Length: 406
Image (cartoon, rainbow, N blue to C red; front, side):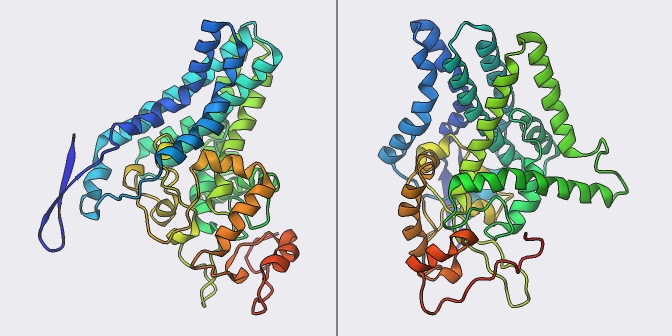
């Protein structure tokens, strides 16, 4: 197995082996779940197999995460540069890009042209959409890199779920304002995932459009100029969709509507759990404090990290966005999720259960220390949260001190 050699500050040599090197391939094949479901349907004749991705994502994956547990090991800093430069890991992200398109086209073909029931049609569109949510994760990993090829591939893969504005808003909006009231992609204490979705999905698009408009206008160009990166990505989405419509027929239209909606929902689910209630404050000079690892919820659960390109080591990602997935680190005393992302999604879909499990975990964090002054609170829920968690020393938060907040 390939290893990396470095030198410690005291002059001693160190040798590191990534024991999960070949297991990262799971991130490449995980989007192919609809193929397995359809194969089982064809082999057995039972449409119930089309529900397999639901069971694997929301029941089996959390159970595997719980059984296998966590891995908090870090690559030594002395070998991180070598690890980052290893082309194997980049090639994994390259390889999954065409697979996202193949999965979309295959699922659309099967749903639109084969004799399946209406509920199986909806189920296949839903679960193809859930796997298309992984395309956003692929675009997320590559969109942060300085390589022109990776930025291009990120733009291309985001056409699968019709979410071409993601990289712009995420990189230049979310990472700038993460864990503040100004960020549409940071959830607040007392805010359900459903209220969050109604704010986050349109807010992300508005933010991306404003950022891209400003960029173009600073170059003397209209927002509708062909150089608009959002429109470029959407143009590819339109071409792919029209191509499937011409080949597979009108049923592609409801398929894509369901597919895209559930892809968006997958991203919303991730955004909701990643920064819930965490707050970045302002420094004495009025500027936001630097984004640190404790401004993101982290998870070291092995299985879900292996199928999500290490997305769940989100704390290090926000502190060091250019760091590649294989090099992301665990830190002690971080906000830690009790399960991997898939299990946390299920918890989030039941708001009272989410609040019961996560609010006390949030308030117990060392940097929160039970003080609501240190929490990002949903304004409409402030009264009830204050009654339950408030302290006499707490000062009423001001929700209008961030520029541009409405």
